[in-house]
Image 1 (cartoon, one colour):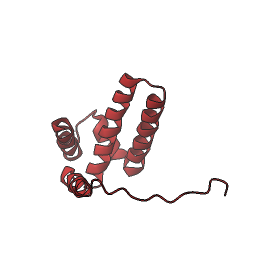
Image 2 (cartoon, helix red, strand yellow):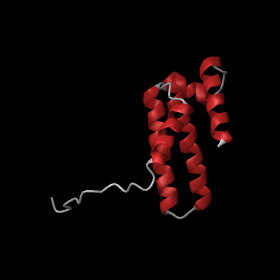
Image 3 (cartoon, one colour):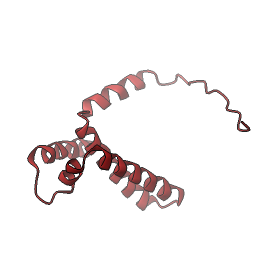
Image 4 (spheres, helix red, strand yellow):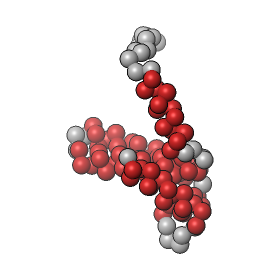
Length: 107
């Protein structure tokens, strides 16, 4: 997971440095709507790759999704620590199966 933290730090640097020709800088220049569009596209591509049973393609799409999610996090001032804190809280609740309500599929 150090790779994710390192990518996050690089994305922070790109946001602040405005490197010429950087795709990350381009995303920041385009703004939140463009960033979110890319998160959605990568999510859909990951789903399709998984549905097709293509492990290599799925892994690649997961990486694309993580990258674009990290860009969104930096844009929205969400830190890795913020995410880790929520994951820690969720881990404390492990084993607490939520009861799901049944949905009437005929309505």
